[in-house]
Image (cartoon, rainbow, N blue to C red):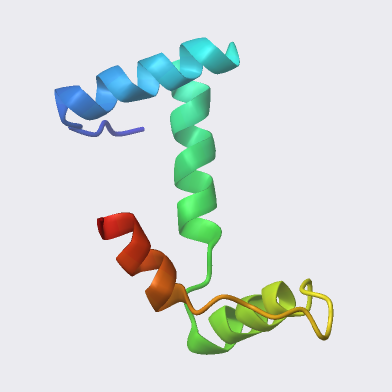
Length: 75
């Protein structure tokens, strides 16, 4: 099939990741593209994912306000 033109810095990073995973860069690129193209970015699916993540937190556990954490990281 056709070919793609990809920035050199991305190719280098892909090669680095593939090496650490023991994969061929082509196989890793295919894996990444397949995952990116199959991911549905519809609001309903994002909402369902957020609700699934929220359900992982046990009831009654007090959560820290994320703005406090961000402010703390800025110091």
